[in-house]
Amino acid sequence: QKEVEQNSGPLSVPEGAIASLNCTYSDRGSQSFFWYRQYSGKSPELIMFIYSNGDKEDGRFTAQLNKASQYVSLLIRDSQPSDSATYLCAVNEPLRRGKLIFGQGTELSVKP
Amino acid sequence: GAGVSQTPSNKVTEKGKYVELRCDPISGHTALYWYRQSLGQGPEFLIYFQGTGAADDSGLPNDRFFAVRPEGSVSTLKIQRTERGDSAVYLCASSFSGSPTGELFFGEGSRLTVL
Image 1 (cartoon, rainbow over the protein chains, first blue to last red):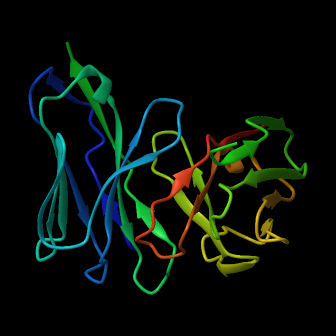
Image 2: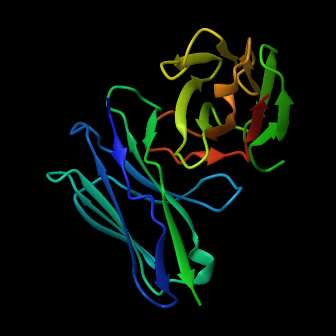
Image 3: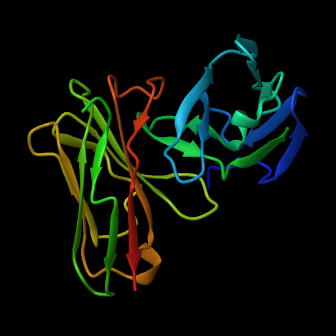
C-alpha cells in the first residue's frame, strides 16, 4: 500500500511566523511532489511542485525535498490569516502516469 | 467558463439508486481525472483519461463505478446501486498533459450524499 503521511493538525501559528508542514511518502520510486492548498469547502489548488532534492522557493513559500529520507516539507514565511487552510501533500505513483497519491492534509490556522 | 465545471454541485439520493456526475474540463485540456474526497481525507484517485480513452482506471473501487469521455471533452462518472459508503465529494480535474508533472486544475466538486 503506497502511502503519503501528514500530521492532520491543526497547526496553529501566529501571524508573521513561519509555518512548517511535513510529509513522508513510502514509495522510493516517486519522482514528483506537490503541495496543494484547500480552503474549507473549496477545491484543491496547486501552490508548489518539486522534483529535485533540495529547496525550491516561490515568494513566501519554500518546498524542501529529501529523497533519501522520503520527506517533503513546505515552509510558509510571514504567515498570514489568509494562509489558513488545509495543505495537501501529493506524490506521483511510479509507473502510473497521471495518478497522484494525496496525504490526508494538515490544517493550518494563522492567528492574527 | 474558464475553469473546470462540475454538475450537480450537490446530489442527494437513496441507497440503490443510479447517479451520474458530469465534468466539463478547461478547453484544450487533454487529460481529465476523477478523484473522490471523504471528510477529513485527501483526494483519492479514481480514473484518468487521456483524450477519449481511460488511461488508468485502477482507482475505481468496484464495478458499480464507470466513467466515460466519448468525445474527449466532457466526462461522466456513473455510479450504479449506490451505497452509503459512496457518500463523498467527487472532484474532477483537468490538465494540458497527462504527465504527473502537469498542474491539475480542480473543479469545485459534486457532493454526493447517499441516504
